Amino acid sequence: LEHTAMAVGFNPRQVVYTPDSGTLVVASDAWLAVLDLTSSDLTPQMVQLSEDVVHPPVAEEIVVDPQGQYLFVRQYGAPSLLLVDLLTLETTELPLSGTPTDLDLSPDGNTAAVVVRGSNELVLIDTRDPQAQPLILDLPPDELLGSLVYSPTGERALLFTTAVPRARVTTWDIEDGTFVVRGLEKPVRSIKVSPDGGTATIFHTLEDAENADPDSIFNGQEALTMVDLTDFRSNALLLPKEPTAFVNSGDGRFGFFVMEGSPYLEVLRYEDLLYDEVRLKSSPVHVGVLPGSTYAYVNEEHELGRLSFYEPDTGELKTITGFELNSGIEH
Image 1 (tube, one colour):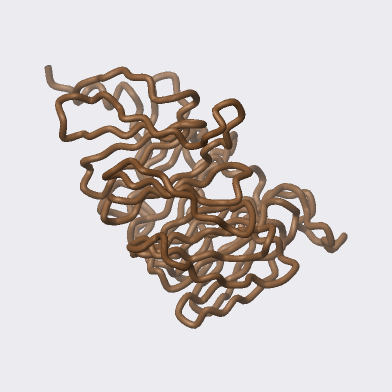
Image 2: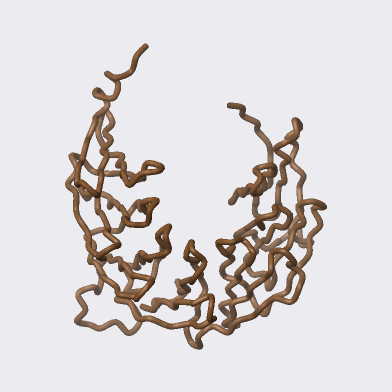
């Protein structure tokens, strides 16, 4: 393990690797630092992101194409994308009809999808020929859609807004190009799609929608909704607290989350859109999934350290504390 300190620009905010892991790019507010990881000299090559060096638009998001040649940069308040050729470090502006609010790469990497909320457009750029004329799709009117989440299968995507409290999500069928606006119990905070593309877990804001039913049991409450992305069945759940950590199982059958101060591991069963609560021995702080399995692990608060493992297919919970873990160490 080697450590190399370097200056990469003020306020570094995102790091991406090219698919071959040969190049590392660090985006800061006004610069890109490009490092050739195959070289013994790790001096970064700096790329200036704006001619305005006094008040440059802040780089908010970067994605790299599957070939590792082109990098796309979304900048705050800039009505364009910045295209960076990582082979030559030349930059080109790709003009848009307004300021983009989200930038995502399709699962196959062939499309950079740009949401332009102000002009109600979804701009699709071919990453293999990014300076060609993009495909522009009109989004449903009056939705103010600003964020997009792809399904890992590439069959569909979900669009939503966090700019205003609206209890709706829009599904985009990528093959036929159709958009369908669907109602929810509460506005959207964030969305996670299971690895198999079968289920979306929608985390809601505590704030209620502009036109919320005054008699709704969800008013003023934390909540989430599971949505089956095949037939769009859904199940909305009231929550006592805001989730602090969430993870999907690798096979897409389960979701796991924990809440601060709540002594439970919450298990979402995507096959039937129901859930289980698993009582833990102490308060959880983090949840993850062991690679290649459905086992969830939970880090818990304990003076000696505590770790629990849960297998959702069998319902088996195993917990070890620090002294038990340490006793197994051989010197």
